[in-house]
Image: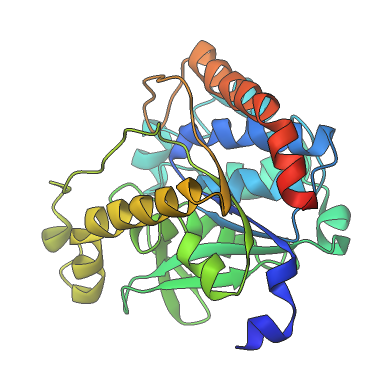
Length: 288
């Protein structure tokens, strides 16, 4: 009951799903939030939800869209070249060094001084369980952000403080239950799949590639069940009027590492449109 003692039930939690480049939908939503001074007290972000969600805490409208459009075709950003040369589809040096410090810097001071609590979800490969890492010092905790978005099969394990991590979406793709467990009553969920999406069982060879980590394999093989159960729970709370859910109103076929600039812009624009269409509803929900 520690969370309730902190009076979290009277505050707003923002839950951000991952989804690789579909996460630009979330970036569009968050830009509208910032433009309209929509305030959340805590963010629970997983994978792309964490990597794009940091711009809300640093108050940088447009940053996520800007650098993704600018560097989408840069072989040093993310893609096959990075995978072949480094073992990571998302280039560590480019994405978590040059980009955030030099090319399109994250506003570290604003991030660190913000009173918004920010949690990045990671999957502990040895236990197979989700961990929720509070990111309070962006420079210090950058590796946890990288771990949250490190997709299996196309990423090296991320080792931090003796633990090995991969994409948080394996263990908890939409950390809605965590927000409930923390005691939040006002929760806004941003999904990156349309309302009729149902996840099917993965055919990827988790058991072969990650045989040294049996708990991770068990979690990965049951991930589709966990995902669909979470969707059902979200829809239940949504239908009861207890939460707000934003999800793409249009279907745009996206690859995980999408290079088509028109598609990147389009999914962002849908996020902007959907959020604007629900803006009054969101404000009334937060203020009630």
